Image (cartoon, rainbow, N blue to C red; front, side, top):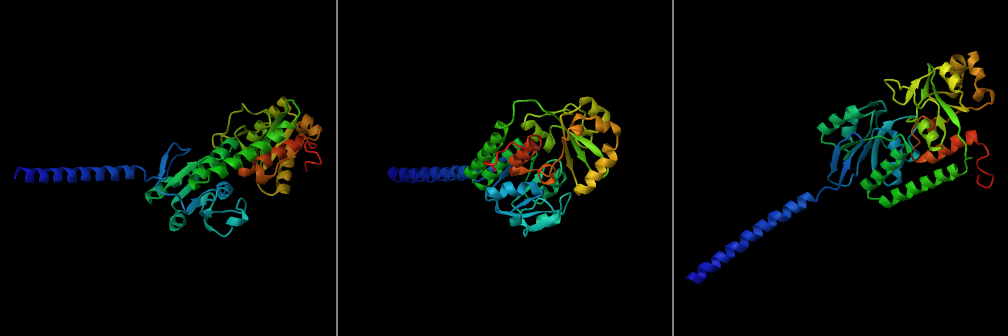
Length: 319
């Protein structure tokens, strides 16, 4: 009788231990189900349960880096510029500055990528629809590389991301190595049909100039309240700093922009006293590289700006 009771007791203990082991195993599995945890540029922590297979971006700047690490993008804003041919036919979710959240939700994305400072207001709406969203800043070259690293982690193609970054670094280094060891002081103006502002170091053109070692004469200027990358334009201040060269970024038709520059800036007699003007060192930079974020084309932006000041930078053999 005692032996029989002992057998029942032993069997009960084994079953109980198995039950606890099963619970413990389930808990461990639950802890390892997440695919990736991301700390985004808005200070948020976002956990992806699975590898995203339906990504919607709210800025066209993200498209090329995502494509180069094999991301599955199903939607983007409608824009005349910034959409590569291989994404022309994907669903559009409204204009860049007027995203249609209903269209985003209808695409049933498992990840939305938003641009910091542009799309932040959409985050609560997307989260209320149980859609994971990360907010990223992608303006400077370092931010572009950070996004590439993150995108390659999202797609599981880290080797491709690392290769792309290394290739960009090498191209930029090759341009910088050819520059003469001298200090060039530059001013960067942004011209629209309405007005002219001065670009600071955190602007796209400003960051490229800084990478090349050029000194932005307006680097310490107080930024505009509604645009931290720009400062008010003052011809008097520009004349006082007298830069070696002036770069102009623009938005819109180039002929209209040049006419606006003539009307608002060049007709002033003080403009003609600038050394950069007298020596014909005023350069209009291409919108594709300096108005829109150049992304993976940062090496090209660096080369374009460098060659404006040093047109013989590349030999015929390099071309």
